[in-house]
Image (cartoon, rainbow, N blue to C red):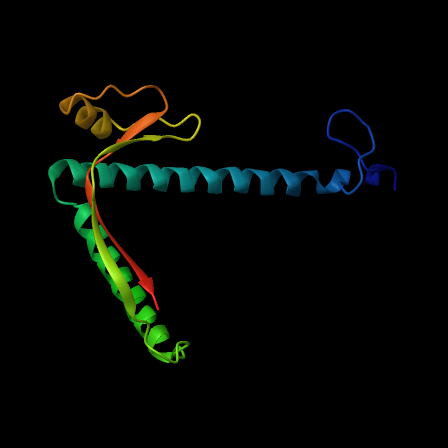
Amino acid sequence: MQGKKDKIKGNDQAFDGVNEDDAPSAEKSRLKRKIGIGIATGIAVVAAGVGISLLANGKLDFRAALHTSAVKGTEAIADGAAKAIAQAPNLLAEEPIAVDPKVVDVDWFIRKLPESWHASKDAISYANAIGVNLAEGQTIVRPQTRFYCRVA
């Protein structure tokens, strides 16, 4: 029973759960794990190389695949939304009536941005084109038409 003491390999200190007799099997499992990781890494590298070569040769187009899956996903979302809307109860007993509708043309204006935000390159170029100098923390909002109405 002397050879069955718990030890860490090489320094004769006790270590729970590892017997001297189990050391070869622990080494084998560690070696198998390293081999498995090496094989998985090799497969990943080969797959990446094949993908890159297909992209370089123009035989693989991710944009078409992404577009197709995005369209399918959008259609599924739209179908689900349409079903949910059809099943939703009508919460309004009466149709709302728009009273005094107004169409307002809004000219460009300068808007203050939240702290640490910056105007986009597009906003800066538009501001320069119309002769407006934007200060730090400002952006320009383009002219627009707004529709306002009260519901009776």
